[in-house]
Length: 197
Image (cartoon, rainbow, N blue to C red; front, top):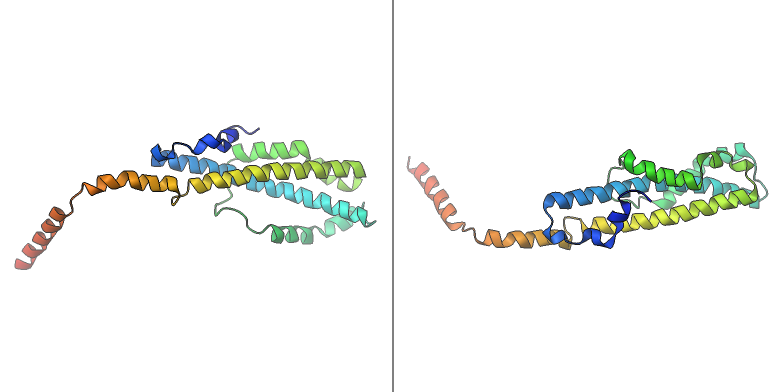
């Protein structure tokens, strides 16, 4: 498991936000966003591998598998269809997470289905192809679930969330002790003196 990810996904991560400082609030949101962006990038890699292996399985079922040239020639259409089907589905974030996040996610993906397996897709036996497809599907399901949990954490940490509103409630009593009347009177007095000059 990726270091710190279990802590972020734990239900207790978002507790105590009402007492958190704005710096803590922002740090927690940034940490969740880094994990979410890292998961998004590696999820796309997994989906690309899954699409390629799935296409080979489909071609074999139709009696046309095992031809690398034909498979490669259809990659552009395959990937563009996959992108349209996926849609954006992402938070409005720049996908630029640190390697410390992307690297471990990618290592988990490679441990399930190494790039060399994908490169040799037409040479795989039917059983090997099926096993690789199932491994990728399991990885995609698990990572998608973690990403959804990160979305929920980030929603809790949004500026308009109940936790953020609690800050306003904490600050409001202080504002109520401030009397603006003397300040307004002073401003009026200064303006009046300027006019008399």
